[in-house]
Image (cartoon, rainbow, N blue to C red; front, top):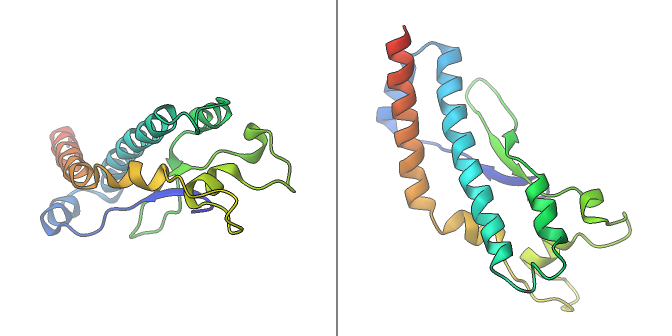
Length: 151
């Protein structure tokens, strides 16, 4: 969680068969575009969770910090592509190194019990998990068709 929200898709055999028909670069392009679109939607839900909570939106700094982050490519290998919604940078939040990290404290609470957990990241990811997986599949399918028409 320290680096951000990791969105990965594993599995669907039919999509895998169709992807194998495309050249390697086209495969990565299609999947990367679908994952990036998913990450953008997840990022918007995170912003909505912050805006809808008077405690999280009280100063406006958390919302501004999350707005400053954008989904980006993560680790990559021959068999894996990753898109990450990064957590806001400490400097954007105006935090020094000796201060606690507020986004994580909100999500999980503080160990000493001085702040209860008020999760907003996990609910934003989980609330539309099934629909998002279907949408990623549709996006990959459309991308495969688009790339097949090009060649």
